[in-house]
Length: 276
Ligand SMILES: Nc1ncnc2c1ncn2[C@@H]1O[C@H](COP(=O)(O)OP(=O)(O)OP(=O)(O)O)[C@@H](O)[C@H]1O
Image 1 (cartoon, protein in one colour):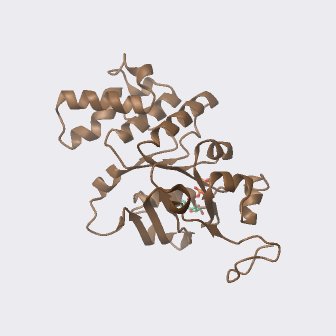
Image 2: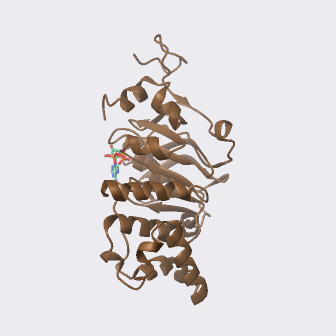
């Protein structure tokens, strides 16, 4: 039975909400934090409680049933919902609110990059996909571009598969390769944080495995926040997990805690497969 929100514990010992500060558990500094975040689509309040802190160089997974607000929350973090939704509260990236009017949105999104559910490479060569954003920023030195292409593709663990066909169309790659190319494209501009919205949902198990290996390697250099429907995936790759339900982040803790001894009954029911 759920509890009265004013009471810390229910009669049967379950908390209604349990949000840890990950810096106390991981020793990592917090790079991104949301405070009193609320997101509205017209009159529909899709997020009405999302106070979370994300630690540097860790993978944080957002899980929860369909429609619970995971994607809305994620997309708000680098303002992908601008013009679509109204956002109140604070989204602090290294202490600066990304919604401040003077923020250069283009530069902010360079630092907080995003990879979407469906691979969306440009209809260009593999090489041009990676260099597109750099050229837009005025970088034309061939040596710098070549180096960035190789480094980004290596980091995204796809270099060996594409190094001999950099001038071929990105659209000729498999879905899994396209998704890793999209990750390479996102990291080519040297972001700080990578947001991934169900990046493996369109991939087969082998490609999903490769993508997960890639993410585990990338966390050495990037902070990663990933929405996933796949609980095994969250358990395999993430350090921290947030459970969302009906627009609220109800529980946030180390992934091992969430999957073995959650403090919130609804989290327990969800990870046990009782609903979703
Ligand atoms: N562009 C939009 N316009 C209006 N309402 C939206 C829009 N996007 C999402 N919503 C609504 O916001 C709520 C949260 O949706 P959201 O997609 O964030 O949930 P989710 O947990 O990511 O779901 P799923 O796992 O199915 O992708 C839902 O009620 C949804 O209908």
